[in-house]
Image (cartoon, rainbow, N blue to C red; front, side, top):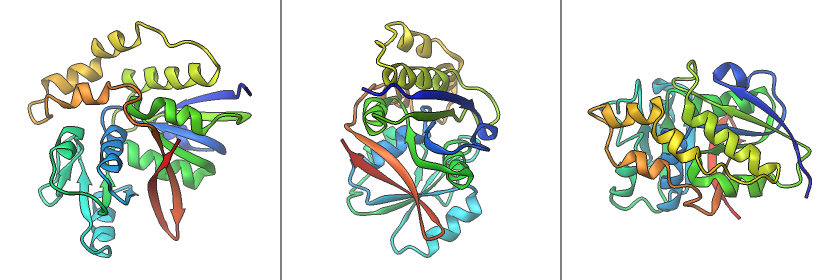
Length: 230
């Protein structure tokens, strides 16, 4: 097994000046929500940087669903919030197209692709091992922990980056990792924010729940996230 050189970055600023295989992490909650969407049979997820871009993209895609948040709140005209619980409880999603915008994750992936990342994978704990499998035998991997709104380091993203980095290097998982995330500031924010579904935390912490990675790519001028089964 090739052990890749790992380059660690954080926040939106960390997506600048990168190239080659890249993982962008947003565990609470964008890329957990994305994984639940793809597991529910969503055909593809269009990733956007702003609310206006998301609305414009959605208008051009028949029967698409707007999904995401602004300052962690679902905009009134969005069909889905940035919540894996909400996705899991939603009516039929099979074959639909979702247009997604979040404060950190979607923006970070778009920036990583524009900067030169290729391939770029979106990840959270729920797709950790599948993401590692997708990057086997690479000589170098950039891992970007997107953080809170892309400007503040988030402990859950850094811990997820550590987990993926360790596995890429052939190391065993740290048995105390989940306990640290549960006691961290990110988990406390999810528990105490009134409009965040109380079921989201456990869904975000379900390590390796899904056996697919999530690869982002440019399709024309659109950034699209699709599942890549391992």
